[in-house]
Length: 204
Image 1 (tube, one colour):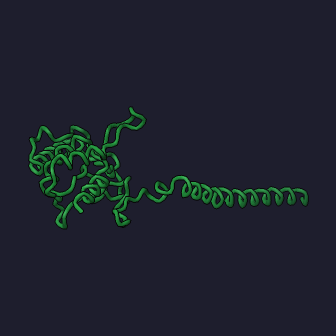
Image 2 (cartoon, helix red, strand yellow; image 1 turned 90 degrees about the vertical axis):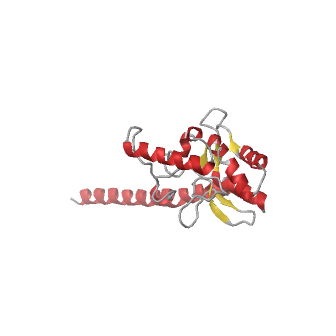
């Protein structure tokens, strides 16, 4: 009996020591090491890819889109507008989601038609010129990018609202257009927040 108790006690102590060691290694040492490496090698990404103004004031993350609207929720004509968002009330990082509506869903079809008409009127273009990303939300609802085609139909409006030459605004769009990753993955894209900050700086 004593031998059996000693054997069980030894097993329990070994298990307890293993749990303690693994807790310290995987719960303390490993997270601290990864955090330290991240801060040393990738500090901007590790801290949320925070975008700041020329004065160093944080205005958002390069990874999360945001709306450019007035207090009533109307789009501001002097800013490039992002694609729609189905995350909470719009670009809510705590409620990331898509609409989950299929392409034949009548509610989605109606919403797309309404958005297309509104965007065409807001930008002074024909509805047929409005690209798909202007009227559909991303899967996460947080996509910070728009297509060059969507940016292109907004150039005239932004230039007029800011009193800038159209070619100046068009050049800013071109300089903020990111190519495909590795030259073939994904599509060319523009970070809306970074583009709007560049337009702000030009106006200062």
